[in-house]
Length: 108
Image (cartoon, rainbow, N blue to C red; front, side, top):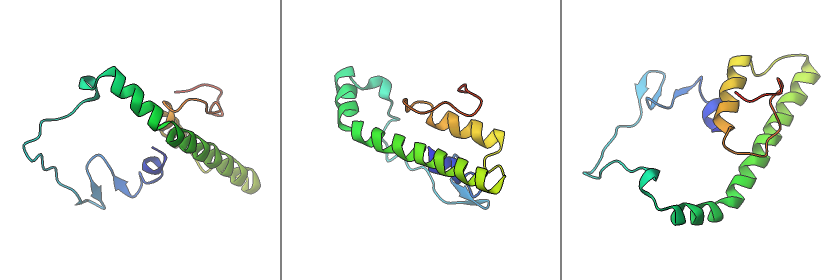
């Protein structure tokens, strides 16, 4: 998500490392790997209904973030998100829906 994209320079989230130091280890406790593929459709619909306001709040935060970034870029005549960062950001929020299009007018 957005925080993950912003923290890329500090933390390799997939490896659970900060500055080369491992933060987390995986302990399975004998529980098999879970997947949403095994969750009934009715349960997924209930979860969507329950988390709807969470998605609305996250969408509003993303829009505010984009607005603030653009405002600072215009005020300072600078670029805060290079094209690679912007592409990664848009990829991380692509499943939200209802967001304005990226500057190029298309999604990645």
